[in-house]
Amino acid sequence: MTSTPSTALAAVIHPPYSPATIKVESFPIPDLKPTTLLIKTHSATLTAGELGWFDGMTDPIRPGYEISGTVVKVGTEITRFKEGDKIIALTNYRGGSLAEYAVVDDFAAAHVPKYLQKDLSLASTIPMNYLTALQALQSHAQLPTTPKNPKPTILIHGVSGGVGIYAALLSHHYGLKIIGTASSPSPILKRLGVHVVPHTYTTSDILPHTSNSQGVDIILDTVGTPSIISAGYSVINKSPSNKSHFLTIVVRGGRNGYLEYKEAVAKQAEENGVHAELIVVQSDGKQLEEGLPNLEEWMDVVREGKYDRNFEFGEEGVREAYETLERRDRKRGKIVVDFQ
Ligand SMILES: NC(=O)c1ccc[n+]([C@@H]2O[C@H](COP(=O)([O-])OP(=O)(O)OC[C@H]3O[C@@H](n4cnc5c(N)ncnc54)[C@H](OP(=O)(O)O)[C@@H]3O)[C@@H](O)[C@H]2O)c1
Image (tube, rainbow, N blue to C red; front, side, top):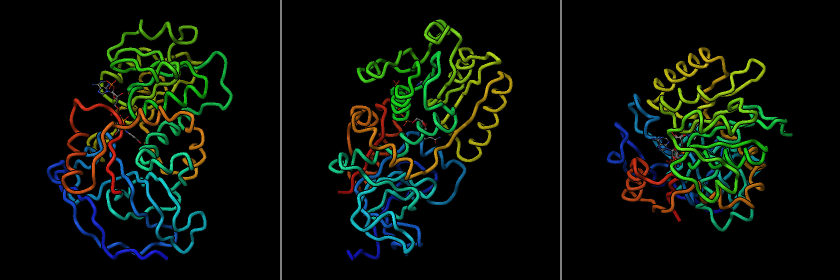
């Protein structure tokens, strides 16, 4: 058995949760529960808007919700993983992946396929964005595995972003007509068959591109501004015979903001006669592992979902990573902090 140290360095964000209040501190590595894994971290990634999740809280936070690394210890009930396995995971609310060693629930972890093992940095950018898009389309929009005719139309707000690009890939796979908002088109969006419209689109930019000009059947909103939400209701298919879905994933203002926003989404949905939901991704290592082989031929999508610079673990590197994440003019995509 590999010997592990008794303490490890980890990032901690103190209230009021800004890059300036980030510290790197030493923590005891906890004992494992029967269904948890201890991971030696290779890379951890940051998510756009994540500092806003802590609004209203008062405790220091151990951030980091995605990880790639090597299993160094397994809980007594674990059979799916062994020491030395390379894994990626979305840690859900557990957090704490911005640490030299991190504890991960076995249900959250997925084996890294061979084709990604040489780039664990890139692999760490996949779990949250891929699972968010997958669960939005499969579980929430309930897309059938064989495409209907006429093809349903999806409108993805922020199609050029980390989540948006996976949503475009999956929509392409499902055979949907895809419209997406972005500042500019890109070769990969073209390859995925996305009709790109500006963020400030009008109904005439959208309706002619939907099946029978009936309007959009699914909206996936990854941007979350009030104007985007109301504009969405002007292009959604409201035909009583059609079950349209308006899905938004953007959570601001901590737990209170989440609850208020959830209520507002539900109210607007009722007023507009469509099904709307504020959705939050769930960790699911098996679902992630099943989907990973499908990404091998789409590595340009995976790369597009990542910011083009990596940061090195340490107080300065983590602060700089969060400062970059918070900058309004930053390019989109997951920001990676590397430990190795
Ligand atoms: N609920 C959940 O479970 C869940 C899971 C993952 C992520 N999220 C949230 O989803 C959001 C998106 O995450 P991401 O990783 O995809 O972010 P990202 O990579 O930074 O992408 C942001 C997207 O928003 C667009 N955008 C930026 N400013 C805009 C504006 N003023 N108006 C319209 N569009 C604008 C960008 O388009 P251009 O660059 O082309 O302008 C880009 O496509 C974040 O708020 C994140 O916290 C939620």
